[in-house]
Length: 94
Image (cartoon, rainbow, N blue to C red; front, side, top):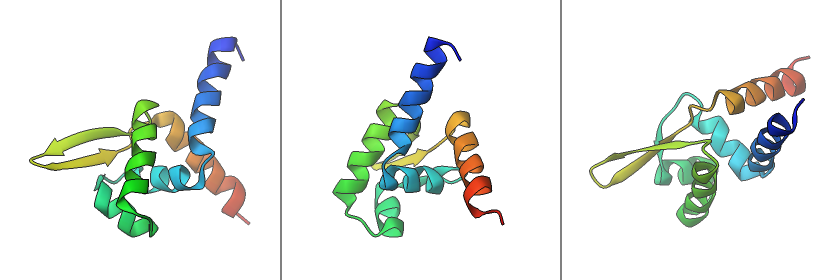
């Protein structure tokens, strides 16, 4: 692994290291949701969901789309998707 790959991997894993951000990425893999929907599904405040979504957006793990006054978030990160699939396979397969 070269230095650039190691740096990119560290950024990805750092973003996924928080349980709320990990749960958000799981929700947004294959689904597009507004902040209120993310907050509701995770049982957290809208402000907390917005804070974590902002960090994921800065790190380019989620993308946004605006429709009138609502901002929708979704993940197209192939790297994040691959890590989530590997986690599911490793942790939940008997």
